[in-house]
Length: 74
Image 1: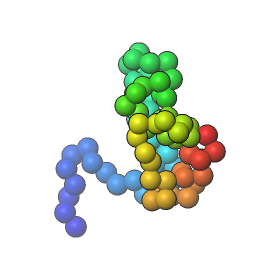
Image 2: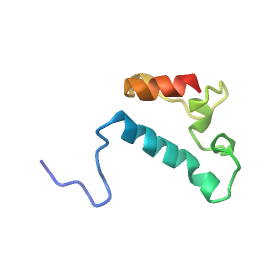
Image 3: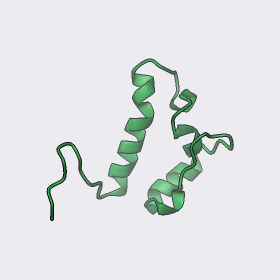
Image 4: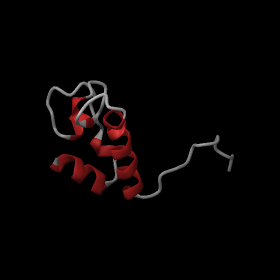
């Protein structure tokens, strides 16, 4: 198996996937660019919250079941 580039790693559990999605969604908030992740226009956070007008569509079917269920409950 080839060695991945530095900083690249596979996510092996649904919990890891959730953590990374949450981390990415919070980046603009941490930088003071917006108050809530869904306020950032280029974020998928609005789609995870179920906004019909979200600029980014999410393929929930390809996600682990618990990540998909969590996203659809928001």
